[in-house]
Length: 218
Image 1: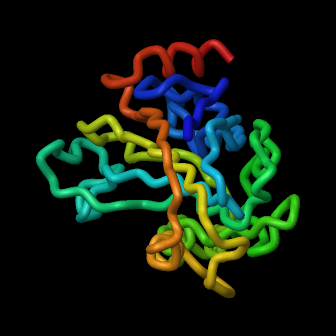
Image 2: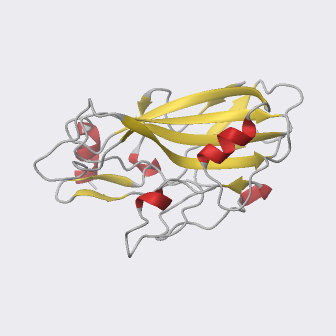
């Protein structure tokens, strides 16, 4: 199976239209367009009864002490943990493309609804649910896609890994407010094939000079 995208190339920078936050010269970060990227795929194995798509960032700081703090940086040497940005399951086995913006085309304070999604698919909660849990204005259940917003003072370029799975079951055995780990566990023994695309993104101007230049011009 082969996954491809018109939105970004493998191991290349993701445009900020697919991000939750983008660089701002005055305030470090402002909200971005938050469109889900476009994807298409082929070479699907026989016996495929559904697809699942998961996006995760494996480069999230394991400790929040230095995150977005003036005069400090998040060291590249800090141990990192996973952060799920999209958990999409029960996609029709005949489907071969996800159009840009078809699942997300903006930021919804307190999160988009779910788990029901377009085309009879389902979406789990992403990890902005826990990230914003203590925020009075943003707390809620964040279903579906919400894009990159790494710390603006992180020394490390973040990777966003989109993995498509061909499965031998029409629906995964997860329910309610399921998350990425729930889906990874439910897929065990049911994966016929998988393929990944990785985009990179940063809100640190030293790592993403093109992004701050384009933002300042808009």
